[in-house]
Length: 235
Length: 251
Image (cartoon, rainbow over all chains, first blue to last red; front, side):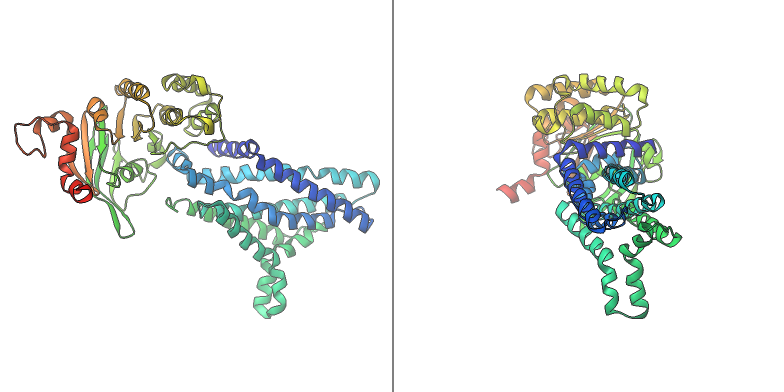
């Protein structure tokens, strides 16, 4: 698995070699800062609960931008042939790339830890709820990234990859709004696959096995499909 | 060393390779010749386990490439038709990454990197970004990644495209220097190059091998010649073998 580590390292470095990483970081952090101020000013409460909800919403848009190039670019430039004829297993390629994007995403999220410092200084926030909130937001981002990774492995066109992951993520994110059009099992289905519902408990400090399982199984599902899809060399 | 038995490859209804069988021994330099679209690249991709064959088996050192794919890939160095380079990396970072994923032990990486930089004459550009390099440097960087892990088998898909005559000569010398230790498969359109380095020639036409012979006996046999006494160059033999196509396409 040390090869997965080398691939992750290369993946992470490639973000910082292009301006994309800096643009995304500055953009994301600016938006977070803006909403952090608005929310704290509006709620007058030492809690990051609503900040997490905003972060979740922003990740819906950011995750496909982070992941669209991961496999598409390699397929387009022919470097996929280099990776796949090197003595590296397909699993190591997928895990390495996923880990590379996750580390970048984690850096982005950790830049917001300063918010907790601020509310801790001026108030007395619930530390454990903040912790579980970060955990939930991170899990959700990791899930979105797994979806983007999968979409990127399907095509050599980055725009198509981004659009495909937007469609899947939008469906999961907004599916809770569809429940009102359905009844019974269908309504429960849309309720259960919605990412927002599963984050709800985590941002207020409740960790349930169901929510964590939802994210982890979603991640596993996408990673396995990615692994299967890169077997198909010509797409 | 490399044995293929009845390899076929279909892309949908198009049959790219039909019943390709041959054997290549250790230390041989073999030239794959054929027109564009004859199946050279497909065959090379199957040998490097990038593409699976639709049917048939490939054995390398007696091991099946489907079953022992990772171990066999370790023995192969491959330069695809367009060099697989990460354009935003520097040459040094790229070769370092190649050394890492090809499983060279950490203590050896620097030594091997310096060796290929010297052998491929990349010393002037190691810190340059690949996107800014000329085509010849890109091609040599591609060759450098193929030989960095000292593979026993080297598969080069049109390695001389984009090189100037001097670099061409250098590359031929590099290949000649490598040959004592390695089996080399090379595909090219420039037949005079094959005449200078290869010992054996496989001519592929529309997915089938139509000639599998040592270069010497092929040149002496005068295959495709109209009169038997004629001594033909490889190029003339090649054109004669594809005579009907050159007439229908360009005549």
